[in-house]
Length: 219
Image (tube, rainbow, N blue to C red; front, side, top):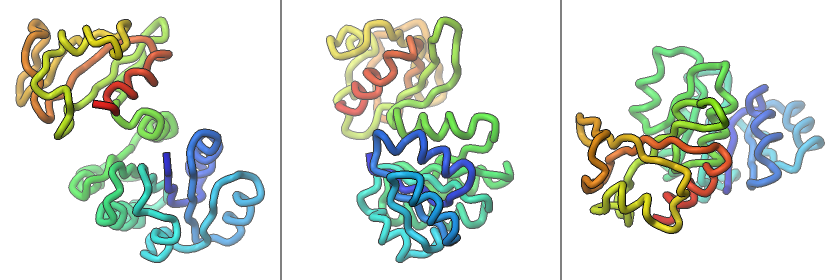
């Protein structure tokens, strides 16, 4: 995936370390010393400009980005970067948020806000590695609770969770435990038809999450 990261902060550097082996990474920061240090220690493309500058985003190839992560320390700066990224059509925009009062504002502009600093890194990595799933919780025995949405134009629209689980490409060790449909939570009927924007809650082993993500990606 093509990932743009705004800010060579502690979070930004850790994200580069974790992602650069498997993704194309471009990092933007206005501090020259930080840029030079990151450039010398990683394989990421580094752009020495303010991330909230339109030309910096264009130089970073924002129009072809699959994910943009704004990891700056200032909420206002992150808001500007996220707003610009959405205007350029980046499908997944994620931002760190220092002040919980800003959470709704980020959601309004279409960004995914991450506010809890103790799980910041794992949450951001989850958005990049499994963009079609949202991890809700870790369970014992290396199991996870995940949520997936039925997107517009998905081949799953009109099918039932039971039919989906019988698909050869669906990881058979994952189980759909409930469907969130409008304001209802349905747990006792897996023969209901899935509609656009319905959400499914699933439980399964963490080592099969990649396969599950690919399943939803191809629908």
